[in-house]
Image (cartoon, rainbow, N blue to C red; front, side, top):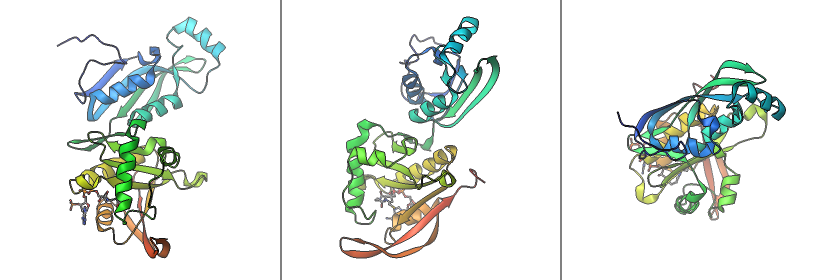
Length: 284
Ligand SMILES: CC(C)(COP(=O)(O)OP(=O)(O)OC[C@H]1O[C@@H](n2cnc3c(N)ncnc32)[C@H](O)[C@@H]1OP(=O)(O)O)[C@@H](O)C(=O)NCCC(=O)NCCS
């Protein structure tokens, strides 16, 4: 056994070096919880598990009430509301978040067991959420896909602001090593009935295609989206895009139909195949 001296915001361990992180009620005491979860994500191996006990509050507990509870049990001051905890876990890249309330301390304060998983995109591939520092790479890979003329009706990649505004923050991933593969999803409708329906796009840098990155990212994305409550992933694919079509069908997408001469691309009317994958897990 070896003891290492560090802080939970800067863990003295290399990337992807541990299988499991366990801890007993300290994250609530950190004033930079996002950094704590980002460090946990960094140190875990793909498919690694995070399981800590912590103190949480249900809803936005009244500050007065919190102060009174703090007098009684201590360490409540930094406790997160359950929903905020989930959002921070998702922002760090974790999926499958489960927050189980255990002891009820009154005034909306609970002990909780917090569990989550680092998604595994493949044996040698790790998937992590897109960050602003990925902007140039993400937009360049996106543009390279558009330049094939088979990926989309779009011809010019949007700005980073435009790209991120149209895509869900918790469903935007890149492969962590090279950033040469990316997958991101948009909500198809604001209507509550479609809350679990998203449209995705998947792009791999032309110099890295046919190495299994697309498959690994798409399978990890399917799992992450199911964990996030998505039941249908849909997309439009040009019939000429054999690689995309084969890959999606291999991972459970079906062709719903052909929309004929749907739009003009470089002056040519083109058909679009509508594809979708209905989860057998979420909303089953
Ligand atoms: C579609 C795309 C994401 C696939 O990514 P990739 O990393 O090259 O794909 P993978 O290496 O993981 O291949 C997975 C499967 O896709 C299919 N595939 C990949 N390239 C193919 C090709 N040139 N022709 C036919 N099928 C192909 C195969 O079924 C393959 O499985 P296999 O290796 O068991 O045969 C990639 O080609 C790409 O970025 N294209 C440009 C952008 C684009 O068109 N995006 C999709 C918009 S709908």
